[in-house]
Image (cartoon, helix red, strand yellow):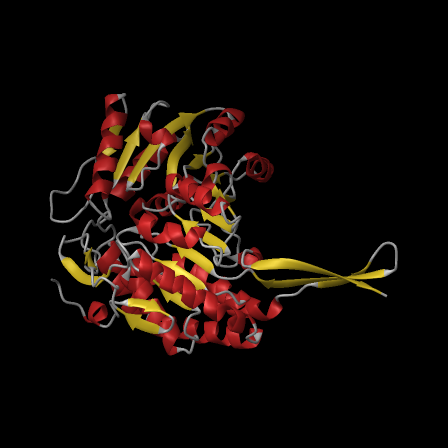
Length: 484
């Protein structure tokens, strides 16, 4: 087992009711480093009984936590933000070791993830209702906001810190208790975050963390339990659909951030150099393992050759290495299954007539590395036009007509993120309004921001995280009619 001071300092148990404890049956699950295939650590592998114990702790703590002063909740988040910032190198190392992303990018996630705590520390004291006079005049209408109650949170492996803080921050600010289940591939970062929140004084039972290799068996009873009042999930649409079905029994408040199939459109009047830089960000952030990653690149035929050439030069020049290597710009994919998927998608595209300009294969080294790849002449019937690539592959199609490319961009069941580049202001407004996506990036390749509402439409889910809207997901509106 590989040794790391960062890993050694993380608790490996379940965090339930303010106590660190082993799984009831003593089982553990192995966490591997995708860059080497070596074991990083063993953490507790929760059973269904452990899951129910975590929900009991959250339910027992809910009433008292909801009565906590908003300022107190905000100050806890602020202290947590400051401590995350101070320990940026530790969190970055943990994420690189268990997920694979290069250290520089992991540090970027620490900054991004920490900002959700700072943002919602400021929102905690701004929860407000309204007072009005009924149209008939005889009644006063009082509307108040109250915490929805115990929340079940299921977070993904690709952003181990930020996907946690984006959910935990507003829940703490709103006065909700939580049961959090991080992905089995990347539990260490969440466990470290739980330790940090314990250190800043978050009361026992407010945050409960269970790690498990049997997600379905452990989480379904919790979701179906009447004490749970909200479910929030980030992950695939297929899993999201199952969770929505399970949540229907209790008529839970549900927020879902699901899969994407993001179009990236380059119009003929775009600044091509800026578009290439934007495409690199939209495609290669997190090694392409992001639901917001540019999945379909549509480039106007008149500039397609220039764009593809410059994109291939950029992609071909990236350094592929273990994320712990300071020179690394592209780390490994999460596991062999991810490699198999990317290889199958590239093979399908080539078999249908696409051309590989650069990359196109694994590196042949230990770990799950795949070369940054640019493909041109992608046919419209290729599998990667419909499926998320979730890897470092940029596949280019051409177009000549604005209405036609908008129709192609919208021709998917997904609707999370989209991007386009143009220097025409009228076109910018026109296309932004026409794209059927929850988020649109205009002349930029990264749009996620703690101050903005993150989320999608159609099969990409519903609900929003971040922004002023993010805290509303954890609050119920209560109306009180007062007769004079």
